[in-house]
Image (cartoon, rainbow, N blue to C red; front, top):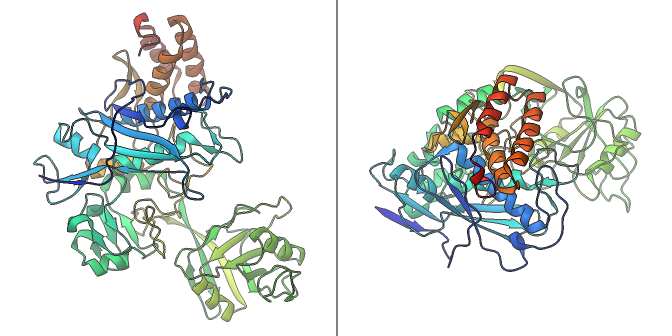
Length: 532
């Protein structure tokens, strides 16, 4: 067998309280005294997280995430996850990945192929390197995370649980071991993730490509997909019908990729259609270009959609100026080369018109052919964020984004997926993992497709279903948390009853399943309270 060490530099383990389940994921606290997971600063309990310090709440979230993934996955070998908080690069919430990769074990489905440490151990049914960290995870000490476990993240905050589930997912195998910039595989050997990575332009899977072809594929935005049958099946159950942005008249007819805005009305076929013109304005100190939209619009945009250039002022400022001139929508052309239309941040409650962005190249083409007619069209035969065969797109921007390119679903997916490159407020990874677990199954993981159990008792609630709903996993993780934090069995059962009522009221389980869940909870030995 071959082994490649990626980033192993851990001297000792200080494990959080472990919990037993199908696959045992054990976060290993690598933070020093009074920092990160050991931060003693007081914090009020929130969203089902009973911790009373920042460090305690962080530990509880890490354990909860470990229980969720551990309940979903099946392995006889514990997975040790190095966990710590550090200042990271701007806007980076966290990072994680396998510490080791392995190839050529007789139990591996693909020979001559890299497998991440946790998956390699699960397939080999042995710890290929005992007493070693399998996954390293780091989280930003610069963000004010929401540490609740209930999926109700307040506006303006980010859910730490969503971030941890995302990063643990990378370490478990949602990653390739290829350099998108150069096209080189680690040691020239393909990885199992890349066995399912397919380029529609070249009509080939990554392992069969030359290095130069893979480098070209690594920036082939919108044309690279994941072909695993479980992932494709999940996409068919989850993804919305495709909404295409089309130019229908003029010299630039066709379909264009687009980005969306965090302000204004969401784009729909009914509110974004009609004639588009260039939104000319005066060149002055507020905006030196006549097409930046940063000053009052001088072009006739009343009842029309205006296209302006990115730069100088904020996106919302441009939209407000277009709206003030009677415009009904905005298209922003990027001001830097790249094949991915930028997302547009900012806020202005007074802006009500919809807005989209296009690439620099597409924007130049559209402006040169203005005026033109645009429309958004719903295609019920295709999926948003997937190719025409229903295979979900992978994130392949140009230029390459190291650590993000390739090893994420594309941002074009709708609804958003846990394993997209950015965490957003539409996620609830405590209950829903979309196609992310299905992708791990395609790479070799076995999923626990049975029912959740408490004290060995079957609750009748599926751990995970084909659509990625993980109610059963949540039941197990919540039971484990309440076992660890309740002073006695009566308190544990009372809290489980309140939790059961919330699940029934939300339609996530039936009353019969709730009754069975409480029957199972009653079977927990009193000795387990405080010591799960």
